[in-house]
Image (cartoon, rainbow, N blue to C red; front, side):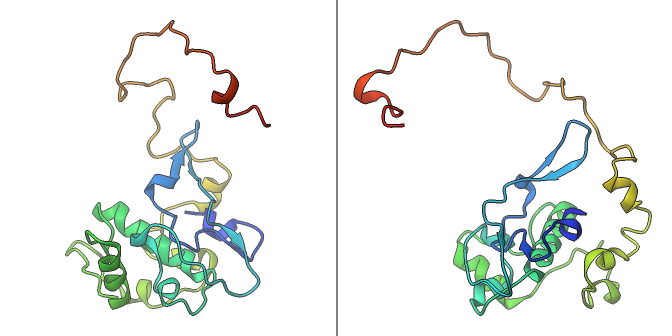
Length: 186
């Protein structure tokens, strides 16, 4: 989660279009989380008006199309944290328009196990200031950034137990020639 507070330049929108989602978080060879897929990231001066991305993660400001900036990245981070804890995003529907209506409605049903501390949800102070809640209190952020702490969960990269096994193939694909070759004009 430290990637939102530390990305440079300061005016980079990491995920202005709702693409900060579980599918775009990968674990590196040392067990640390990496953010991928910057396809919608952009450098902006003040505001942008683009609407695209995964519906469940798009901020209300984006949907209203009145211009938005970096705060939408923090909205998406909140959606991601909610989903990581609960197992599903706070706004979902079978149709994208239904998701958008729920986002604009702004009603989130928090499970009974959620901490209802208003100070945590009462505003954002920027950078790491949002991480002062007791949920984060035992994290050594600098240790994580410097990769000095062992990851909480780490599986050796040679573990392929979650993948099907297929026999090695010695069969070669047919040659591509003439008009079938997509690279002839390159």
